[in-house]
Each structure stands twice: as C-alpha cells, then as structure tokens.
Length: 82
Image (cartoon, rainbow, N blue to C red; front, side, top):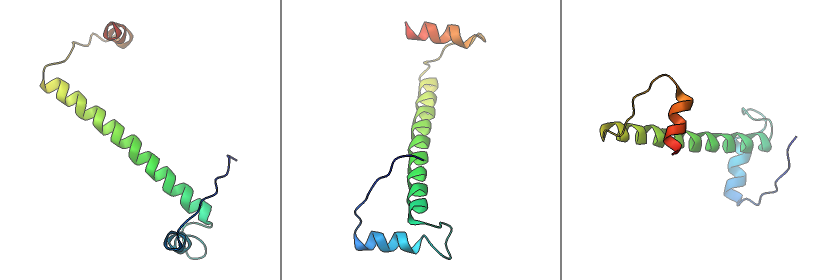
C-alpha cells in the first residue's frame, strides 16, 4: 500500500465524510471515500487537459495550421520538433 496522509477537517467536512462512508453507504471506510474523491478529481483534471488539447487542435485546423499525414507518424513528429 502507499503512504498515509493525515488531514485536519472542519466539523462540517468530517460530518460529510461520515455521512458518505460506513454502514449503508458505498464506502466501507472514510479512507475509501476520500481516495475515490481524489481519483475523481484527478480524472476531471486529466479530462480537462485532453479537452483543451482537442480544442487547440480544432483551432489549428480552422486556422489552416495543418500538415499532410503520409502514414509515418514518427517521421512527422521528428519534422515537427525541428
């Protein structure tokens, strides 16, 4: 298992964690709940980066900043680095 992290929570946040973990919830422990929240946040950030990259690609295409793909991606990437 990975390393541990101790957190100080406000009473309101602690109550929220407690309401979402334990008996009758999806998460058996507060740690499971918090780990899932962190994974969800990480996934949202990664999705935002991908979305921004896709939008940048569309903007490049609209502006005519494109190159013809000849089927050799490695060669194309080498040319782009120059």
